[in-house]
Amino acid sequence: MPTLAKASACTGCSACDNICPHGAIAIKPDKSGFLMPSVDESKCVGCGLCEKSCPIVNDIELKHPEVKDAYAFWDNRTRTESSSGGAFSAIARWVLEHDGIVFGAAWQKDFNCCHVSCDNPEGLSALRGSKYLQSNIGETFAEARAALKQGKYVLFTGTPCQIAGLRSFLLKPYDKLVTVDIVCHGVPSNKLFQNYIDKLKKAYPRYAPADGFEFRNLRGWGIAPTAKVRKNFFKELTGIPNLYMAAFKKAATFRESCYDCRFNGLSRVGDMTIADFWGIGALGTPFRHDVSKGVSLMLVNSDKGREIFRDLKECFVEKRELKEAVKLNHNLAGSSPRPSDREGIIEAFNNPGMSLSEINSRFLLTETGLKRKIIDMLISTGLFWKAKSIVNKIRSK
Image 1 (tube, rainbow, N blue to C red):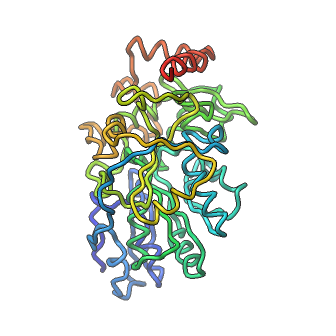
Image 2: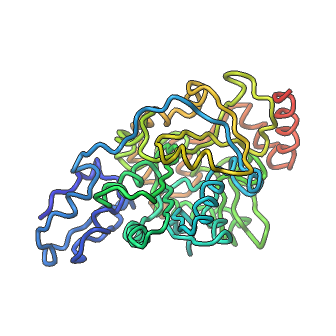
Image 3: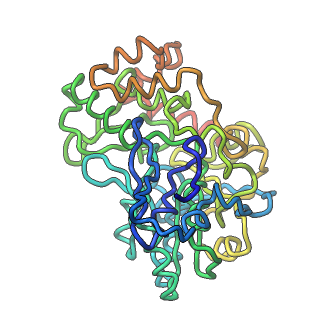
């Protein structure tokens, strides 16, 4: 039997599954829904490739030197189509223009979040937008390796542990591999999110037709998550219907390894790092631009990343202080703290007999302060965006 990462440290990156030439390893959800490797002893020949590919077991150095600079960024072409400033789209466009292929997280049938590939601009829309859960890598590491061996540029985007898993799986560097890690709070499981959707539909008939979900509204920063209830119409989620995000913000539903992440910090695993630039201008040097459509935070971590960064076209770029970027992006520097009731909350979400209201009554996840009530009221009445735009205009003067 191979020695793989302990359950508490395993990130579910799927490197071991992708590299096994005998099909002896499968990635399956555990009782809480988190993806874990399962070894079929009858197929294992003891070659050790899975151990070499595991970024936890082999413990090789995958991080670039610590960054010193941060950039405010947006892509002029796709800013209004993105949940932030469109940094991913700008980098992806560069790769596609160089006859490359792009890998990222996308929604599949029945609210499954999986990594998929794209080789044309039209396909990028499925990869845009934040997904606050762990995507299933599937066989995309092996697909990326095949493209690299064909001499193609490959852009792979994902959480830091997924990027670490890919780089460890490849066993050697590739000149045309471009990696972008996102600043990650932690990841709930697909199972938990799907159970949340089931509870939402059951308790609230207005969401029963939902067949799509946006964690971040493309109209701008600060809008609540929405469920797609009919074609081109999304219904906002506030209060108890938004309990998934209430639990997420308390870091209560993440996989165990997220609370001691080995791949976050100011030394990054990706050639570039992207996130929302929360608090820009309000917590540092004034930012004299309208942020209502979102602003990306970008860190450039390697020589390859710097080369591509300098070649990005039709983009806004402004250098900012790194300490400003860290202030409201806490997970840029470290892991989320583990709540004491984490296991109970996960069990409750996965329990088909518990409603969202019952979960909230037991664990008090939703915010009850006056500010939250006012924000929810503005969202429900459609006035939030107007109020937010006024505030953003005042701040940008």
